[in-house]
Length: 239
Image (cartoon, rainbow, N blue to C red; front, top):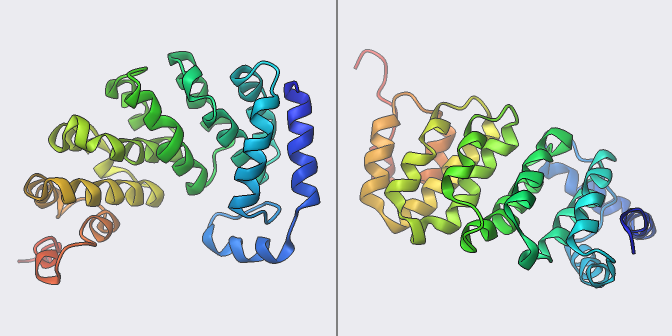
C-alpha cells in the first residue's frame, strides 16, 4: 500500500464508521472546534494495527501520508496518521523528529493531537537517544502554541531519567507564555515533577507565584493538600 492508497483507505474507513452521536459528544472537549467522524479510540487503534504492516515503504509511506491527512482538518484522519507513524518506533531518526516538527505549520490545532505527540511519539526520541533535550529548545519559542505545549508534555516521561531540576529550568521560558493551552501543559508537567521532587518544584512555584498565569498553579498544585495550595496564592495588591 502506497501513501495515496493509505489516505484513501483511512478516509473510506472513517466515512464507513462515522457516528453523529459520538461526534456531538466529543465536541464538548474542544473549545476551538472539532471536525470529525465520531470514531471511538478502539476503532482507530484496531485499524492502525491492521494497516501498518501493509505499508510498502513502512515509515516513509506513513510520513508522506500524514500531511495529506492533516490538510482535511478531520480529527480522526490526523489521529490515524500520528498513530501509524508511532508503530515504526524502530525507524525513528533525527530527520523524522524534524519532520514531525514541521507538522505544526500544517495543522495541529487542538490539545489532543499535541498530546498524542507529547505522550507517545516524541518521548521515544529521547528514550532511544535519537535526539537530546536541547533539540526542543527552538520549540519553546515556536509561533505555534501547540508546539510549545508539546515540550513540557513530552518531558514528563523524562523527569525520572534526567531530573526535575534540569527540566524545570529548561521549560521556564513558558512560564510567561500567553496561551491557555500552554499553561495547561506546564501545570501538568509541574504537577508530575512535584510528585518526584516537591521541594524543588515548590521553590520554583514560589518564585513565579506573583507573575505567572494562575492556570499553571491550578494544575501544578492539584495534588497538594488545601493548606499547601494556599502558599501559592498570589498576594493581593497593596499587601
